[in-house]
Image 1 (cartoon, rainbow, N blue to C red):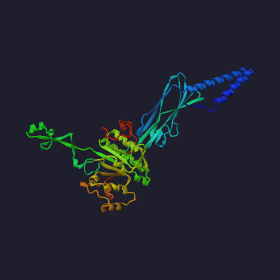
Image 2: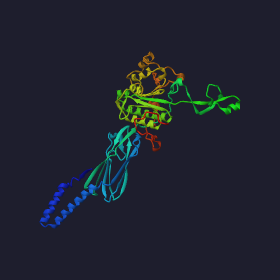
Image 3: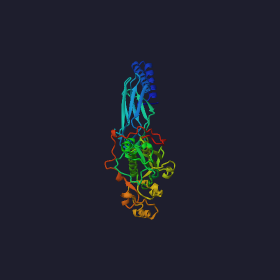
Image 4: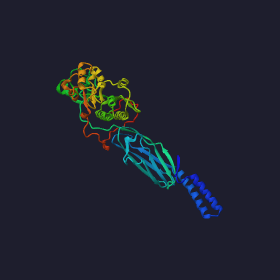
Length: 450
């Protein structure tokens, strides 16, 4: 606890001065002056004692209502203060501005102090709150808090540092996506050799029993009615497995920080879309990730989605590990790869060196078309010449999209094709994403329950 006195009332000098005045006044029988000096001396000692006791038996409770939120949403820090003694006091409570505070602003105004002053009566209680808005993606530290207490005139003060600090994780801004269908040639995330799994919950009808299926599939009532063995038919089902690869190399080469942020927003929206459909998903990135692994294995559920969004929040513009090294350390069997990159260039060509069975499950989402570092005609010529294996023509022109029309053989979409115009608005309270199961621990590697 630190002790602070007002600049106009320095205690050692004041006490010595008043003591000297009282002594010489009494020696010269100047009783009014001596009485004044002694009363002032007693008052100063009482104020000093008052200030020292001001923060004793004072309960201060601070709580932040949201430490993980999307850009554009708001959070509040609430303070509950209770004076547990018979001594009134003056109190000032202040919260240190966020480190790198460009990502969080106070709703009271940019120039306002994150502090408040009040007086507390004996055994009195008071509460209040600071409101903040998350401006942009990142991780910011809010706090610590400082409490100053003293006499009601504020002449003598004591200061105490409170241990409360909060790491505020701001996810990329949520954007609204148009309806889209990823044109993979087989079922996304399923090995063709394994076939399609029938879902017993989706009963479709009956047919004559073929004898090559288990007896539990026999529909006995239908068999008795028709006089022949009938078996149940179920609609096929599939479980999607998507592995996102976020390539920041193109953004770093072009120094495109705005495009980098927009790519993270689109990637977060894509992950949310697949999570709502019950798919399993994972992610790896070649960007540096502060305080979090740069790869997240396949998993699903709100907890896993929260971990992916936190990874995106902690992504930095600087270079990290290569994607090839990261993918080698975790299993992604049966998953389709969705690569988010800035533009088609030589760095994205390496994904076409995959075997044809794996190439059929590679899809690109680009921020923009080729920006001139490699002209489209050269890229098309290299593709047709065999330097980059061709994806081949899919049945029913599955790969006929904007990328093909531009002369490229990338199965791809562009951000403008995905994002709605009215996107990038803050969520209402009712529209918050439910990540209540997310504990925030980076060590989770398995699949969460859907």
